[in-house]
Image (cartoon, rainbow, N blue to C red; front, side):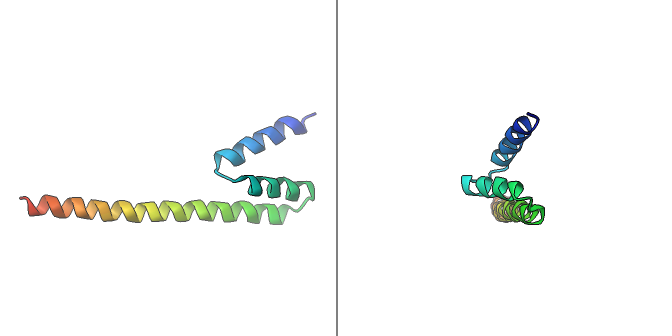
Length: 76
């Protein structure tokens, strides 16, 4: 009985973290098989993917900031 709310919370957390349906199914499969090491690897890979997206976005923001700065300097 305690497993259902926990499973629902985990499911919501995975969805909130942007995991797709395949990753969610893999997560629960690994959990049911007791493969904690592989489960943590799956989560770490998704985390790394999200972090790469942040870095890419930060680079794009930096490029825009430089362009804005350059335009402002040219109009002074």
